[in-house]
Length: 152
Image 1 (cartoon, rainbow, N blue to C red):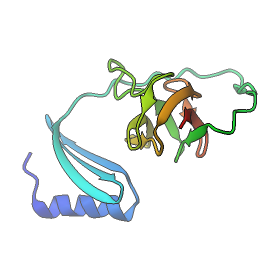
Image 2: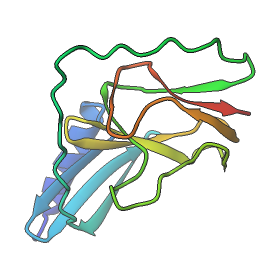
Image 3: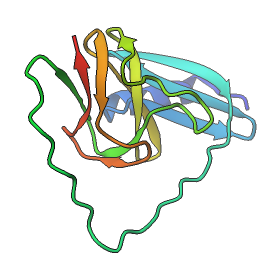
C-alpha cells in the first residue's frame, strides 16, 4: 500500500480535529496507525493483525451492580474517560497490563477502552500498588466509572 504524504496529513488532521486518540487504516496486509498521545501525534506502520470477533451475550434482565463498602480515602480511582468496553490485555492471548497487588508507575498503560472500534490505551496518572480492578474483562463501562483503585 503506497500512502501519499497528503493522504496521511489529512488523516492526522482528522485525528486532531475530532479529538480521536487513534485511527487505523488497513489495506490488505499493511496498515497505518495514527495515535495521539499527550497532545502529540505519531504515526506507525504496522502489520495487520486480525481482530477476534467479540461475542455479546444478551441479558434477559438488567444487571445490577452490587453496592460496595466505602473505599478508604487514601486510594486513587482510575476512571473511564469514555463509554466503551474494558479490556485488561491488548489481545485475548496476551498477559494483562496490570494485576491486583502489582506496582505500577505514572504513564503506564493499565487497560484499553474500546470505543467505536478504536482501542484507547488508558494510562495511570499515579504510581502505586493496584488494590482492586473493579470491572471484569470485556464488560461495558460508562464515562467516569471507576475502573480500578490504586494505593499511591
